Figure 1: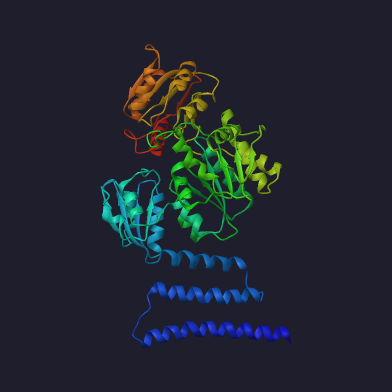
Figure 2: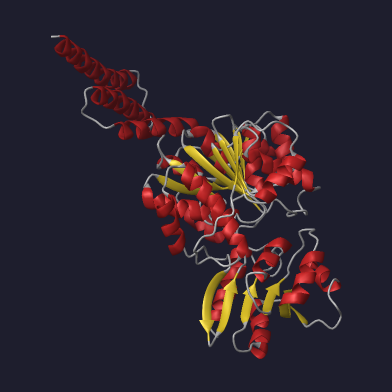
Length: 505
């Protein structure tokens, strides 16, 4: 009898909910007010949530559908009609993904970028169907006033006058990945470090995805915006995020850190952006700074040493220092053994078995642009390590081969020191080809005057020199140790041009 009464109450509640929806529509109609499409979709979603909640209690529906509806309501209502200025569209796809997501969800958008309409044409063409105001080739202070939110791209200067203006007007400053974290209720695995973070991120994601379909990749990944993942995730999802120091600024502003954090390494980088190593570390430390006692921080020995030296507050989370296990792998270099060990610690903590993890590590081929074997032609191996953008990364690449190589390196300046790299070049490089730029000038100054070095202003010219000098069993390695700007659009363009030249040999 009690069950029947409960069921009757539930059915009545369901009917009342539906009636409320219908009556609301009628009343608005009688008062000669019309509902917008967005208002209608919200009311429908609310009705669906309540009805579906009742079905769950009655045992007629599964919870995941209910959770997804809650996410729908949460982010839809959060962005609808919000006046948002997006600082940075760019060409890599992340800005594009964020802007498209915001436009779809009813945001009132101003998109501003220092690049011109012509330079951004490939991104702009994909946003044609949306009503967006663009301010291109410049930024304007007026676009950072009277707004509900600013979403800035990675790499916006710390003391940008436009961000200062927004803060002066009490406008929240957000970033893609950290805003996603605020609005979701997922488990986040965040990976940072001067080098190694990409390999560790993709390895964790690759292996987790084999055992759990509810796993997503985001953060500092080419062409991939994190915020649109709100359309796909629920509270049971696991998100694997590669986080650079700039993205971690957003986590610092939000006072949030991932539940599982990995710190791979810490050494000089982006010194053209940061005033010193302490300001660089301050952003990096946001990966663990706001963790609690239930969270986990996994570190290499080198990163642990740097954290102890530079962070003088108590770390609340449990710290795990990765061990030196040996793994059978297709990945080149001793440094990748360390990267694998860091990924292994995460996967074990998530409940995967040792045998499963090791078997997947054996099969994993690595990611493009990270000691990637592009092709072997007549015993000559061509290696694309375009993501090796620091001197330490190049040293790791050089140490991955047991013979002298032809190295393609250099480019624009990040105010890094090349003394140690110059020593390794003299030991391990038989011919050095440098791309024109301040970093290349700095490297040349550190080499003997008779060292075989060429300076070029294109990948095509670099390969003309390669063709004249290659010998049997040589390794031709692109590992720049510097930024790409000047000759190339970005590091991905640099890698793609390398691959193109290899293919036409």
